[in-house]
View 1 (cartoon, rainbow, N blue to C red):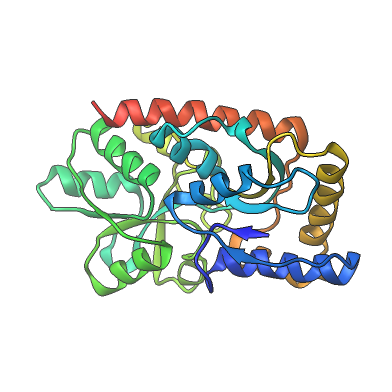
View 2 (cartoon, helix red, strand yellow):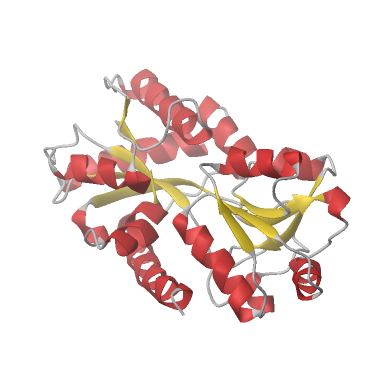
Length: 282
């Protein structure tokens, strides 16, 4: 099991809990291995060289096969075999409650009034999205790129950033009233802040709906793909399991998409990512 995330983080923990339960439930020997770098593309490239018999899989995110692949011109989503998603992310524009802002509209108005707004992002796709938000609303944000959602949280708490994207790490702070989700970067309302506006309310035609997923090598054996997909889906949706508990607490609950529906969603994300990259180059 290649894991395209640094050891010790939320994604790595999710993958290792799934690996542990695969062994317990099915007797499969699962060997987790970190293969990080280039937004998951290193894991994808390593996966391409593996046999398609089900003995090699990789945990990545949909953004790997979408924005990252499109930006690097590194192929198509069909270069690997998508197996199943496990969870989504609650991507939101967030800020400390002490800022006094209630929605992204308040931030835009502050920027129009001359305030320098430092906007924290943790991926290239979110950097482009932050730029397009400013472009569509005729304001300039000072976009600060960092590595990981925790770095954005740290930047907000330290006062080094004014707003930033969170992918679910903000849940506890929002529940405690210390942080506010100003807008949903998804196509639907946020679980913790259903009243928060969508980016479309500010003239932005793009969204960011990252899903964690497992993939196999190209031309993976269909029987192996189906067996692994079913096993992982059972684990992440089992309310008595450790993986389900972790996913529910950290990522808002399991999201299972498989087969043709998953292939279609990944291709649509790849196409939309190309449009975002073009918009951000204006």
